[in-house]
Image 1: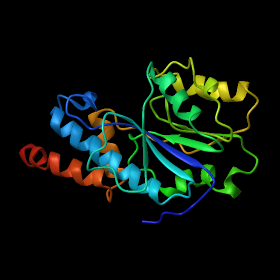
Image 2: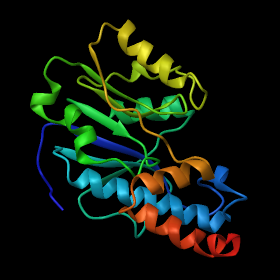
Image 3: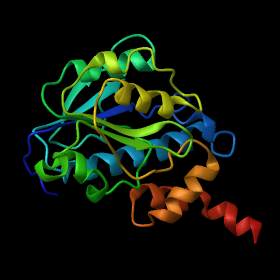
Image 4: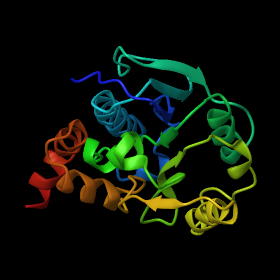
Length: 219
C-alpha cells in the first residue's frame, strides 16, 4: 500500500457492518449476517483504495465503532446527528482545504477514478467534483472549499438526490468537474454486477463464497 501525501482530505462516510443494520436491502436474498459480510468487504476494499491515494488526511466518518476492518492510517470521527444531509454537512464542516467525500458502497473504485479530485493537476480549473451514481444519488463529492451549506437540505436517498446536489454546486457558482458514473451496491442485482465488474476485490471474493452453494443447486 502507498501512503502518499497530498493537500486534500479524504472522507469515507461509513456504517459499522453490524448484521441487521447494514445493507438490509440485500435481504432476504442474503441473510443479515451475509449482508454484513458483504458490507464489511466493500468497506475494506474502499479503505484499501483510499490508502493508495494522495491525501493530507484520511478520515472515516463512522456510525458505530471501529473494528477489524479498519487499517492503520485513518482518523475516525463520529457521524453527526440528524438526517444524512446534516451528517454529510457536518463531515465537511470539520475540514479545511480541498475535501473529497466517498461512501462505502462502491468497492469497485480505483485510484484513477478519484485522481482528478485529489491531485494538484487534476484540481486545476475546478472548484467541485461530483461522482454520479446509477440510482440517482452520488458516490463522490469534492469541494475545493468545504461549505456545509451546500449539502444541508438536499433530499437524500431519493432518485433525484444527485441532480439536486449537483444543482446546488452550480447554483453556488462553482465550476464542477464530473467523475465517472458508478453503481452503488444496494440490492442483490447490484452486488452481482459489481462483483463481476471488479473480480479481484474482497467484495467479489465474499460474494462468490456466499453464492457458491446457490449456484451449485441452480445447476
